[in-house]
View 1 (cartoon, rainbow, N blue to C red):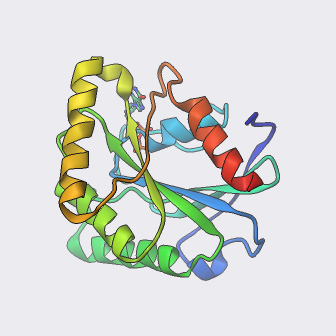
View 2: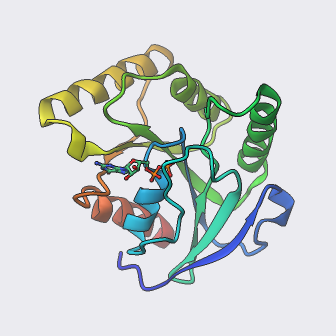
Amino acid sequence: MKIKSAEFIISNSEVAKCPKDMLPEYAFIGRSNVGKSSLINMLTNQKNLAKTSGKPGKTQLINHFLINKNWFLVDLPGYGYARVSKSTKKIFQKFITNYFEKRKQLVCAFVLVDCRHEPQKIDTEFMEWLGVNQIPFNIIFTKADKLKPQALKRNISKYQEILLETWEECPQHFITSSSDYRGKEELLNYIEEINQS
Ligand code: GDP
């Protein structure tokens, strides 16, 4: 898929205030600093559509971007930011779970994990929650340029082993790098195929 246009539409913390259009939408979520903003900018050919920052936890809103005037890319808040208070974490969780439970336009979520890290409980627990709630999701392993192919393979296998302890099948995964554009076409083509089906 070629990205012809990418426009910021609205940011908010209430699902009720998200766009009313019935366009298909795809949500991107992951721990703070996982590379989500960089990935969104890479996918949409923009430098600053999503805010990249050294300070984790800055994007704490649901951000809707209209792509090619026919689907929404949704940038969800980063979870697991250690420096916010427990009560703030709870509120985040509530509005994130609200989004997943209520947003009918959601086609699937992409859960981003940093390919360099061992599987983290917060990520696998979140995936479990999505699975239990029957919310379709795929995994995106980010920052692939930072690992040699063997190490990348090993880390992906570790994730799959953990998921297979609970599920019969693993979700589909994508490998991306915002530095060398790896995974860009594959991911956009995947979304295009679903949109056309
Ligand atoms: P976010 O908090 O998930 O939105 O993460 P950002 O996109 O702001 O990225 C966090 C940090 O990781 C920044 O310093 C980015 O430059 C860096 N980063 C993000 N994606 C990549 C990538 O694919 N490769 C490399 N090498 N660094 C990346």
